[in-house]
Length: 364
Image 1 (tube, rainbow, N blue to C red):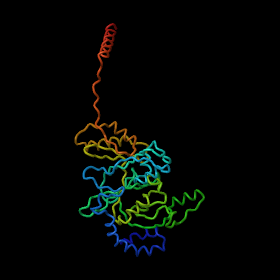
Image 2: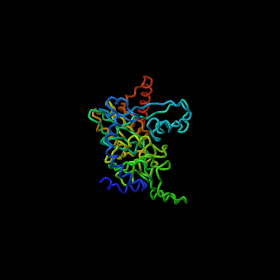
Image 3: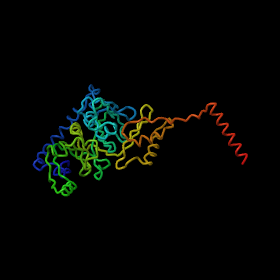
Image 4: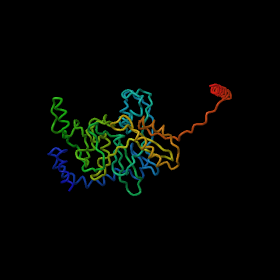
């Protein structure tokens, strides 16, 4: 069933000499997948040694990770270099550091590391991709007695006009060293430049799919690596989800066919920690700023969770949405304005003014 269902996919992403070998190897690979996947999970004794981007699911609330700062020590470091070392994408690091030069941060510069995340408000299973924050969340199955966990990775998504589709689907096939068959849009663009697009790009450094591809149930869409890692954290693809080569390699053997993939668009996320409401906002895709509808809907959601009936400062919320820098911001109770107090001199002046107004009105 699996091979018959994916025959068209084999023809599309594998050169024909490799297809027969793949059909044979996929049977062996499938049988070998389970022990590989289990071995990839940290043992109970190792659960305190989490790799970067791996977190235990919180028992309460929906916050993972830690915010941090980094002092630049190497003059050759760019913000993109720093982002990659800290499991961040381009937009994440740039929005958090608007005053820092992307290409020459400078030795001694303090860089904000936005490594704290509010989990998306959806079922925590399989793969969740929030295109608004350019981030993928993976909830792996764990053995009995192990701590439930989540892994999160920066991604690239479809640029404007090549939007990444939303909805629930599943993975159908994992392909190592895929071939790339340029779509019609690529051929048309090449023709407009007076060039001819290749009919197929074999595996190798020129292949934009990288070394790993996970085929999705959405026709023509994949989660794949890239030969242009600087584009991670941007809207730069033709609709597919791009990952850093090391990131997709780390999950490739642990996401079997049939894994649920939920692609969502949540530019405004609400979190709670110790009774404190938190907001994490990202710019809405295709729009310059959040609409009034988005503000009122967020206020409604906050009121639903606000069991203590705290009078929240919605002016602060509006400011957070306007900024939309991806940093988690605590919402504070609205400060009640104290009655204005006047000194004796001010009261005397006010009394004289009121007497003058009264005398003037009586004369008229």
